[in-house]
Length: 457
Image 1: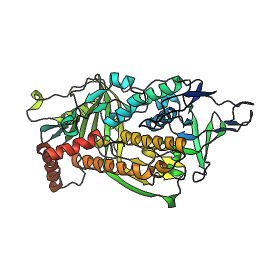
Image 2: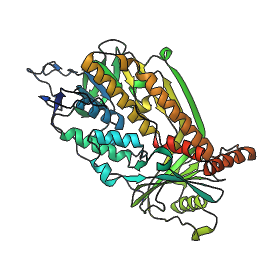
Image 3: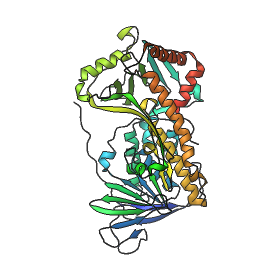
Image 4: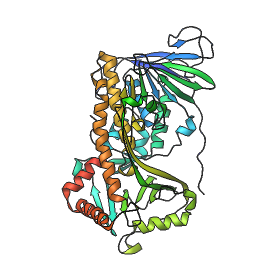
């Protein structure tokens, strides 16, 4: 039966921790710690804490250095990086904790993403439960070809670990740390005022109250549909966009994966992907028309179509797709999107708030990590030295990496999917491209280098 996720408890109290000392290569401080305690719930105070303005009024004002909108991986990781660098911050999340920890997203982590999570102390469960992958398999024309990552990239690999689990890990760490930055669930940002000034203000609603958070900087990590992207005036931005004439039907199934590494299949009936969430749970995708309703697909139809698209010459004796109970289905539209620049005054956009890639290249989460690592370094530099050099270069630095990921994601998507109006000539071009990867070290290395991820520095 296709089930529903459960509910989780909310947070309690915490403290804000400031840190002094040396800066390491990620922008983290490494020495003395000073704690400033206050209630995570931000109930009004009548004395004591200068961060609070007001004394029991319905409107409550707060003050911090960096206001972070969104408690997805980008916002949570940024908060952790800033905390370790001694930079005060507050995270506002419109949804409750249960919702945030249930959102299903891609879970292929580049080498650099894994390194960052380890470096900031957020990889204990990742190292224990993550599935390291040394390559992928491409299937086309009834045959398979493995692309080996370590031999082409100097030993790099990727790790399968669901984004949902990263969020759980980061939430747990932030709430368990008595000096961790405040994390407010159910706090819906409704406006960002004066983002192009030296004193931006975030207005948000929480528990029926109108509240404000005054900041030196705002980090918009609230996704494509969030308020941060829309706070930038239209005449200050350029957008670049491509929509695709197909979607992905994604399924979660309680059955061990039928492969040790991901399988990307190009088939005359459309693309298919075999991934996994764990040694016991498979994650699979089918290319479908954009207007597809998951309810129109029975479990048997899904398994039959997956089996057909993954089939190798030689039939079931060569390879067999194991079947099991399907617990969830969803349809994911495919699009490419970039908004430039990624900064407006003291508002900085990160992750899906600034760019979207089709999931074929497994770049969305990893791009968000690259953004917040870059932003954390810049904010740490400003906090320590007063310099705006890295802040001024934030957008250009991130966009250079973003466009490389957009290029790779488009390449993977265009090579492996069939458009409704595709011609036989275009079919042959796709097969020729895949043949090139299968027979050329140079082409195979190009794919491997991009898949494991470009450097974060």
